[in-house]
Image (cartoon, rainbow, N blue to C red; front, side, top):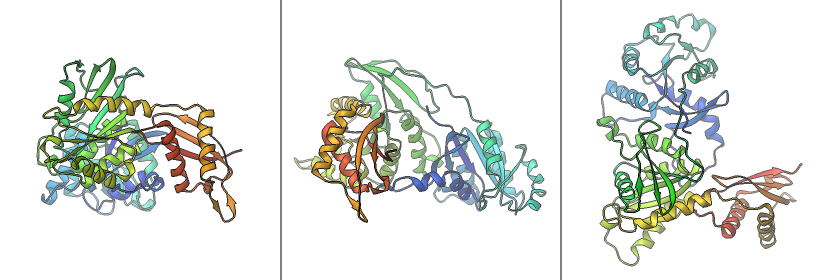
Length: 436
């Protein structure tokens, strides 16, 4: 199930990023620091009253060298296209400005739910001055202070009340759902068409279950798949063509609904930072991952070219060291036959369960091979491990003191699990808990 999307819109210097950080900052601060991922602060996750949602800070969207007002219009248009609910931020210190009125006109025409927030209302006396904002046409303005965290609860109450009741297509448990993500022009559309065009594929198109996506269920060699395709959607207009970050927004909805994510790279262009950003979201979401190098036919090759390219990928995508790399050409369909078996294998690993007794045999052997570390005279004691979830495989390790489990030793245990059980293509989560 994809999460609702909230966008924060407003003119510059009203505190959009402060509000964004207030809503998602706590989550971002506790996320693991993954080497090789450049964080893109335009996008994050928030929750309020146990309701999770995705949130976009449009202030982080740079629309090239557009004039001031055109940039704001472009940012607002992306919010309109992508969001279920829009938060319009204004400033209580300056009052209603002509730019606020311009943004309000754009949002009003969109027919999307808009929650109006008046930021920088830092004391009770200022609340009496917010009534001019009713003139913007969005009903009750919510006085807030991003700096002090005041009034955000009332604002978020109004936001979640406007979330749509989404009913998405439910698929049987044995159906493998996968998506293709990547920058524009890496060949996602061509790959989708090449996969669906295989002679043994039975295709039945179902109209998109989420905005801007088309689900294509099909059967290949007796296995049921659903390809969640955002690749064929092309937004017209300069805003999208000049905004690389837009491709991240598109990818995230597909990631949430997938079991396996294909991170597509253009072999001609090589690897750039945006590839790592997009792949980082798939890793953080705990999805199975395959790195697909497309347009391999366009590269001049010798017997060492593929190995060198894979070494480069491993160096740039250190956080995806578990992901297989597949080289294909959508144009010539060369090596395309390797893709679906890889997807099936990664999906099986992503949902693999290991019996507790077998699991603990491996862990005890690992400890015998490499004894647990000590810290200030205290030694980590491992009692037992159990698997608590799949998709991704998640293990709880019961120990004497969780803080004694250093990252390096956790990594050692993860590698032993991979050696014993495979887990190719899927991240693994290990959670240390004190035994009570």
